Image 1 (cartoon, rainbow, N blue to C red):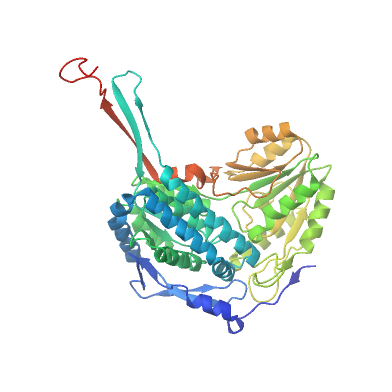
Image 2: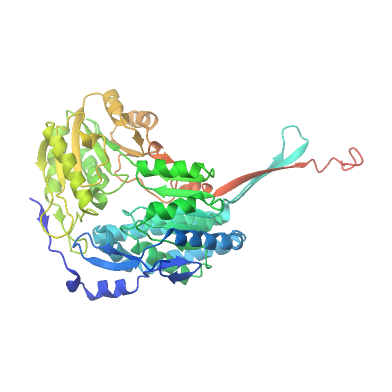
Length: 510
């Protein structure tokens, strides 16, 4: 039975919530100055747990987007020539201050996105690690120098910032997706324009205000929240001064942005949709597999590109696996993320609830068995009961579409080949999960699964020190790790003559 906590309307907000919201900037940040939109328009940011407005913030126009790029262009040379150690120390100060204010950022994410407060605290820790990791990478941008194969000259390979970057972040991880893009750009010496998701812009606004506080120069980071995403993004992407585009979001939108970016041959990083398989073999440690399933499916209320979407369980263990998972899911408490003991927060909006219910209904109509959940939750806010389905039939929409909700859908397999074929039967390839006690099988899966990442006997793969990204329709490029900063650097090769060969007297230098 799903347990739902009561939610709090705006009039019942705690003093801490009201005080925090009063400190969140509500304007655009352009050239170091908080300011209104050019036409004065604003839009409401809503608490999905209550439906109440949190704040009204400036709604950027296309003109504002271009002005933000003007500021990034003007600051470009100064930031690129700032010594790497200075860039690194500024980012480290930001990391330290973020951790000092972890409770503020965690609460703000819970208010605007809905995730349980404990998970929001985890996101602060995870998001902060990108600042720490890339502060360390900033001073390790290297190159090479050596004799060319013919011995006639010296080849130097160097790296420099790609130039102004346009960063488009999603709503589901408001802090981590901002730091995962902003931190490597700053470390590489790039200036940026950030367009946060209109559903959850508040965390980004508070974070960039923190960057100003630790001394980031004006114009290095500019922020343009807007409800007119295509209108604002179009002129920025079309501007020849822009040299880099990074986007996290849906594959259809990513395709559109790639087509626009092609006109100016922009460097692009695209972290797009996912349809992650979760394989449980007959020899799996079921205790470990159940814990991994709960983490991979229900973290962030299932609203993650890395969320397990298709549970493929060996027929010999499916009954026991489903029994254990269902018992755990039935005990999950649903409610506003600020309430104690809540495991499942709201979905981001009504459309997300409708999508989850449509996918569940389709699966049931095709013969799936409902173990628990399977319905929207009555009352204020946009909640969907955590759900477990078994006997999911091939052709069901939820095996093809990214669910982005708390729905765990199980189908069976008999052989390893069958499991791999089913796992790869998707246009996406962001991440996969597999549970087996056979080391050789684990190695085979590393080579056979068509994904950019693999959680082998673990349900969480993300780490700031590791390259995050996918294959096929799940995107291009990588974020995090050493690969993450390379996405913001151009490579230059220079050839010079052999310094030991005189241009006037052959061999004089020798």
